[in-house]
Image 1 (cartoon, rainbow, N blue to C red):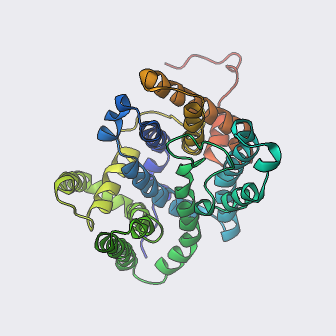
Image 2 (image 1 turned 60 degrees about the vertical axis):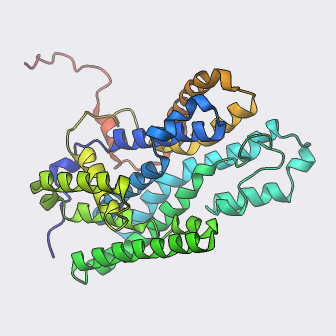
Image 3 (image 1 turned 180 degrees about the vertical axis):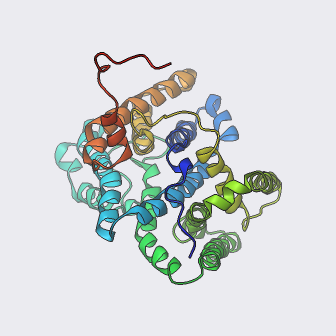
Length: 363
């Protein structure tokens, strides 16, 4: 079995923090346009794609989560890191919505805190958002009454986390590349069968199933594969990027579902690992906060009565509130649950608060 690239220099200096923030903001902008229905913002989904942004998130997760597992000393260590990273902020968002949105509900307190409220709380705390996506009397006048429609991907992400120990166990016992290709192909085949069924039956339920696991696993696997073969990827980076660009351009006109996930992974990880743009994670990782907060904040603004004539002011307010919320979420919740070994915590402690006394100037 090949040695793992755990000490590869590109894993220490990369653009993943910046990339994830840009992807989260992309989803935020597209959702602002779609939820508001403002014609002035209709240009955004024409240039940006929340679907591709989510797929890119899955690619990055495949790369980073498999790396995290390979670096972990034990299964319990890996599990602890995953829970600490995703669940505290997630629980906070669910509780804030469940308890705080009573203020904008059209129902009385007794009507609001009903069985439906309990169902929302339990379903969402266990990542089963599809069982109850709305709260009693909340956002009923909005185009979409869902409280936080972005959370469906977290369910898929958590299932990825569960699958990694099984995947790595198998990869350590059978030839690595054939297994990765097999899982990748099975995932795409599953999604294509469901999409075909959706077209034949005109039933959108099959399309929704295709967006779940294992239909999205191909993106995660593509990211994981490029982690395992990072040295080879780096040596042939020009060829990989050229071929991937051609595939994605052709895919825009003629669907290439069997190649698109791999091509997207190449482009995403090229920007993530090469062309280093600086340490954007120095002050924290705000991408997760942006992703899980933007949807209810947009809904609140629409509920407050923002109109079409102030579309761009609405968008700017939504983005600013989301970024502010993400910064607060990071500093008040997320960072407090990270282990001391986390590079976010360790890099912060490594920075001196004041310049050391009598330090000669280095030129």
